[in-house]
Length: 356
Image (cartoon, rainbow, N blue to C red; front, side, top):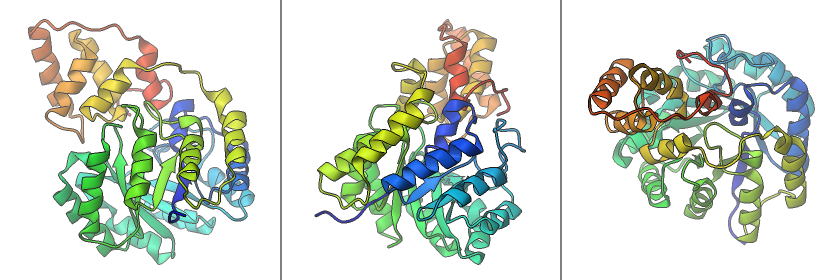
């Protein structure tokens, strides 16, 4: 029997992007119960961008943060629930509220280049004796040695778990291994992996991560999630069980949970061009509205705009840089590809303005 690995299901958080943040308190209760009944021990809920995101203009959710907390708190008897927390979007008092409602874990998410921003948030959560994960968004944007330096910072701040995050779905197994080894060279803290499926590798990367010894794997039912979606909970669980992992999860129940509660929400089919381009270039799909803005302004191919931007910056999407790139592409005569409105709007779950 292989050693244990833990599944963290993020359907109700990362999956919320794909349904325009429309999960209700009732949805949260129903899906939380189905996941817990199947044996999932860690369940992430709330707005896709995390605590206080609604108030900061990152898409209107159906419920408040506190209402999501209450729904999960009242429903779950054994499993722990948690929420995402991005410094400068979330407030320290949001962590206090989470503690009040018995949140079992909190995920402090920063760009891998901005880990220092997490210090106050990690320390505030640890003051409440919460289990804290440090999620390094766009982990691939720095070399493994630099990644290791950030890991040392998070350990110093008091984090309990460090996440390698393939935000764009463009990492290969050999990349994951390099970051894993870099982290292991400086810490014995548990590690996690969060994968997206832009190159169709989310499941295989998740299995590879588990085989490396990464202790936490993120998944979502039916792969529901931002851009091309996440590693599929049902498939990852089935594959891990088949490989001999010791998972306290009932395969048939988790399959039923996905088919009954999430499959009816899925409307997209096939592979979207820009999803694959995002994986190829390691582009974070939250910046897609900016791509839309400048590809339309200069009538240039948004795919090329993404690729050229990521040659310069894989962490941010500075509008001055985008403007410069788009103008150069126009000068070279590279014309716009008509991809349709839906292809842009889906990345943030619906109608969003450029700011978000």
